Length: 114
Length: 115
Figure: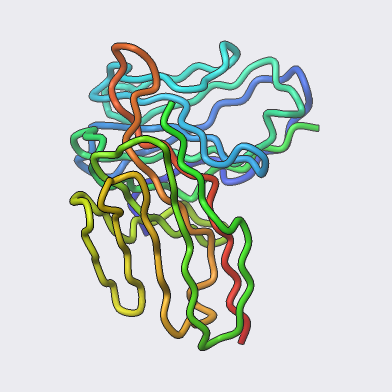
C-alpha cells in the first residue's frame, strides 16, 4: 500500500461525457502528479501540482484539467470524452516534488469510454 | 524531449533462468530510476542510480548505470514467477522551456516468468 488513494477504481462512460478522477496523496506529501497509461503510449506525464500550485505540464489535452485543493487532494477532470481517452490514469505523490525523488503511485483509475 | 527506449518489449522465460533488460537514450541523464508494475497496481520504485558506472544490487536484481549516463540495465539472476511484471525505467526530463523537470518513463519491458 503506497498510501496514495485514487477513486473511482473503474469508470465506464460514453463519448462526449465528463468525468472527475480523485486522488488523495500520502500523508505529508505536497506534490501530486497525474499520469496516463495506455497500451500504445505507455506511461505519459500529464500535470504536476505542488502545494496547490501548478508546477509543470506535460502532454495534457485542453479537454483535461486538474487542480489541487487546500487539503492537498487533487482532481483530474476529463471532458468531451473520446474513445481514445480510454486508459489507466495514475496519481502519484512526493513530499518535495524533486525530479529525482521516488514517486509513490496509487492503484489507478481505469477509464473506459464507449 | 529525452526519450528512453526499453528492450526487449516482451520477455517470457522459465523459472531459474537469467535475463537482462535494457534502457537506452541518446541523451545524458542526471539519474535513472527503475520501477516494477504488477497487474492492477501502480509502479513501485526498485532503485535509483545517480553515478555513471554505478552498480546497485537488490537481492537477485542488479542494476547498472552506464559510464556516460545514457543507458542502464537490469539483470535478474535465477528469475522467479514473483518477478513477473512490467519493468519501467524513468529519468528526469525537461518537457518544455521554463518548466520543472519531470520523470519521463520508458515504454517498459513486460516480463513473464513461467513456473
